[in-house]
Length: 196
Image 1 (spheres, rainbow, N blue to C red):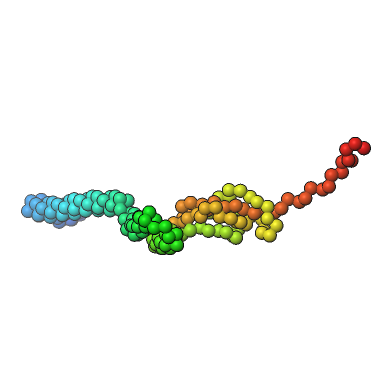
Image 2 (cartoon, rainbow, N blue to C red; image 1 turned 135 degrees about the vertical axis):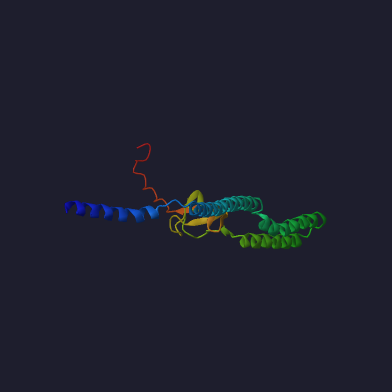
């Protein structure tokens, strides 16, 4: 009887092993199909990778070319704005050689200066003319200091040369004379007069 039970257990073990063997049975057609699908998928990913790399390289080259063009022609618009100013100056010089009318020359010069100021303003260049303002070492360069009882100390008294900013970035500081408090008068001399 114990022998029969042992045979039944062995039979049951063989029965459970048989389906596992059937599942892992070698089927070359299935494996070949899976291999072909995997290769097709790998080719697809490879093509995508190659295209992405080529696109990235083209984008990098285009960006480099755009930056080079921007550097090369950055002043093109500003230069176009300055051409009429130059033309006006040349006409003014020609007129000054032929005429002696100072008023006409002055009027032409004023118009030319107005054109220049407009051209600079269009490009974001503004003058720094701080007369009467508090001295700012970030935007002003003090050329000298003078005593002045009428102004607060560290006030710009005179602008010797205007400064300029480009879109709020300082191009050149204004050269200025700055006020300072008057020095107190020296006390009268306490020395005895000479000869006594």
